[in-house]
Length: 634
Ligand code: BES
Ligand code: ZN
Image (cartoon, rainbow, N blue to C red; front, top):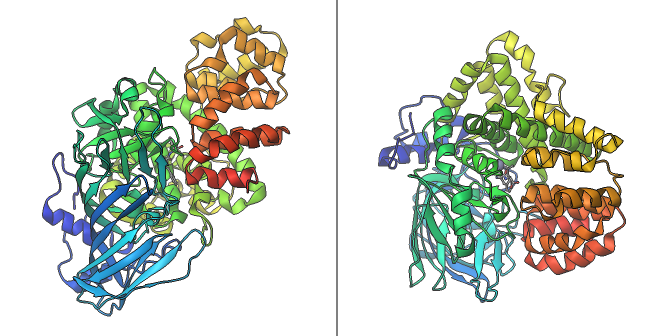
C-alpha cells in the first residue's frame, strides 16, 4: 500500500485503511494492499505491544478520531472544552480507558447519553486513568473537562509592555494528557479536527491545517486528516505573523522576529526537496515552522505540519538550520513510522539524526555534515562516560523505562548511538542498498507503530539477511548491549582535526591569541574550540580571547553557550551579566543544564540559586523538573 501522495491529501479509503492499521505493529506487513474489511480483522489488528506509560487498553477500545472544542483562558490559565472521540471496540469491550493528568473531568457522554465514569488513583508521571463503561456497539465518547493552571505541557507567557501573551504546548513524551484527556500512547493514532477560541488579537495554531491570518473574533478551525499519536498534538496561541518562504513552506513568528526568521529559514524548501529525494514523498502536505518564545524547553519539536522551534537558532547567518533538517526528518522517522513505546525512542531519534545528516550532506556538502557528525561523536562519547557509572543499562538503544519518567530516555544514546548504528549499516551494505531499504521501510510502516523487536526481525530478514553483513554489524551488541561497540564507524573531519591542533598549540603557548583563525572559522569550528578548552583555563586566558575576538558578544547562541560554560569553569566574571540575562530569557534545557551544573561543580551555588530564583518562573515544567533536582530547589 502506498500511502504517499505527491500533493493534496489522502483519499478517504487510504485514510480509513491507515486508521485501521494505525499503531498496530503486529498487523504491519510490507506492501499490504487490502484494507481489512470485517470488524474481526480490525480487532485482530488492534493487538499491540504494551506501553507502560499509558493506562489505555487499546485492545479493548481505542480512539480513531478526535473532535476538539476548546476555549483558551489566559487569565485563569486554563483550557476548557470537550473532546469527542470516535472509537473502535473489541467484541467483548466493557470500558474505554483514557489518560488524564491533573485534569478536572466535568462530565462524560456515551453516544450522546450522560454516562458515569471513574478516575483511578494518581501515579507518579502517569496521572490518573479515566475509565468509561461502554458496550461493543458504542461509537462516540465525549469528555467535558478543564485543565489545571499548572498543567505540565503548557507554558503561559505573560503579556509584557506592548508584547502580547503567548501560550504553547509541549506534549512529548507523556504530557498531552495534562491538557486533553486522550489515549496518550505513541502506538495509538487518530485523526482530528478542532474549533478553538483564543482572546481576540491572537492567532491560534495547531499540528494541523493552519490559518495564515489573524481572525478578529479569535475563533479558529483545524483539521488533521492523517492519523497521529497523542504526543504530536500541539497548540500555540500568540500574536504571530505568517510569511511564505517557499511553495510548501512558511514561517510563523512574532512581529519582532518575522523578518529574521524568514531569512534564517529561507532554505526550508530545499531541505524538504532533499529529504523527499532521499526517502520518498512528504506525507503531510505543508511544512511550516513556528518560532516560539525563548522559554521553549527544547530546540525543536516535530509537530506535524508545523515544527515548533526555539528562537535561539536564529543566528543571522543560517548556521543552525541543522535543527530544522532534524525536525523535518521526523516527518518520516517518528511521525510516519512511530516508536511503539518510549523504550523504543531510538527508533524515532536515531533514525532522525541519520536522516538529518543525510539532508545536511545533500544540501551543504559532506564536509559540513562530517563536522556535525564529529561533534555528535564527541557528545556521544561524553554521554556514554557519564551514564555508564550511574546506570549502564541506559546506554542500550532499547530502554527499560517502566516506572520512570520517559524523559530519562532523552540522552545522546537514542540520538547519536542510534545514528552511528545506522551509519554502520550504511557502510556495511553500501549507501545505495541502504537508501533503498530505508525508503521501503518508511513506506511499508507508514502510519504504524514500530517496536525494537519487530524492527530487529525486519532487519534480519531484509537488509541484513546475508550472514556476513549480520556478523559485521552485530545487532545485539548495539541494541541490547552497553556503551559503544568497537565496530563504531570512524568520522573524519580534517577541519575539526585542524581546530584540535590549533587548540593544542594555543594551550601550549606556541600560538598567540591574535593568531587564532577565529574569523575564518564557522560555527562548528568555533564550538569545537570552546567546548574543548581545558577545565583549568584561567580567567586571564579567557580575557585574552574575549579581547581579541569579542566572543562574549557573539550572536550565535551555540557559540555563546560554549563560551559561557567555560567562563563559569574559569570564573571569568565579565561574562556573568550576559549569562544571567541569557538564563532569564532562554529556557532551552540543553543550555540550562550544563550552565547550572558548571556553577554547581565550581562552588558557585550562590550565583546559581540567585539566577535560578529570578529565572524559574519563566521556565517550562520540563526544564524546572530537571533544574529543581540539579539545584536541590525546594
Ligand atoms: N522530539 C524531540 C524533542 C523531544 C524528545 C521532546 C523527547 C520531548 C521528549 C526533537 O525532535 C529533538 O530531538 N529536538 C532536539 C534538537 C535536535 C536537533 C537534536 C532538541 O530540542 O534539542
Ligand atoms: Zn528529534
